[in-house]
Picture (tube, rainbow, N blue to C red):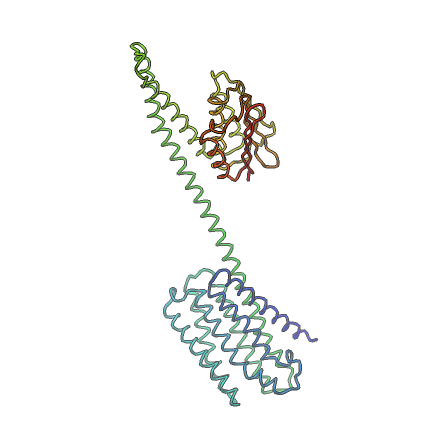
Length: 437
């Protein structure tokens, strides 16, 4: 088999494969330019089957088959130009970029339809219009070249790939046409029908490569812009969280501190003239302010991204437990795996929900368990954080002692896609676990 035959078969394979590839792109992205480019490539495959029947017709001796190829050859050629022009219009968005060029390209769309119809009619009735065809092709070449090069004036992203690809194809088509004319004048020469199409095929392969390169650049740039947008959103969220933290600390925190200070003074003053039958409102105000301040500190801690590490979470749980059970009569025991990674991160939602479960568990131990000891153990096994809180109290005699706390714990673990378990074993044992990223 001749080398040029292998190249032609290779070319046909490329056009069909890439045509199907861009049709898949259209089905995913729903962009019409990919559909038009897909049809353009598939029609190219059909055209060269018609243009080089001696390579593709299994029975070249049957004249009727050859005549069918000739019947569709030039109509398909102008159909190819029609869909490639549509592709350029939509891919480069000419309707917005340049109204004059858009009108010229639309005129050529109509012209290609007329020429395809005229060629099909001429082939059907057996008219020899070769001379007219070559004259029209020669007249159209400089106009098409002007149309394509005029696109350089418009700064459309990735347009240079399409423009240079189109210029290549136009030059290849002109070369093929001159080779065809030379072959018609010298039928027995070295230039065969198949060889005459090699130049335009080479330039079309280059055009496909350039457009594929443009598409990959476009996809890469889109991914980069999406990543940059995501980073910008994260930075904006982080900045907003810092603002909220500052406002809570400076405004709300300062106000709560003032309330606590004044209520403590009221408690001292009321203590001097205490009436055993009157409610101690100052003491209640002080207790409420203290509780709100503690809750606010928890919110600030959960919002601060600097506290997203597992090591920081474990240390905060330890500090809170020591503070919470201080002077309560309950001994607090804390254990954590010595190999907890300092740089392992939890999300803000995981930190908040896990800590609030811990806090609710401490409250239940203090108020309802009758325990003398409270234990907390934190471990990390195969990237799964496990938190166990237990006491040596009376255990789960009934769930009413937990009130809505148990439901809230289960809800919080569902929110972070974790597991929650509570049972009695020499006291109450609460086990929560969650997979870390």
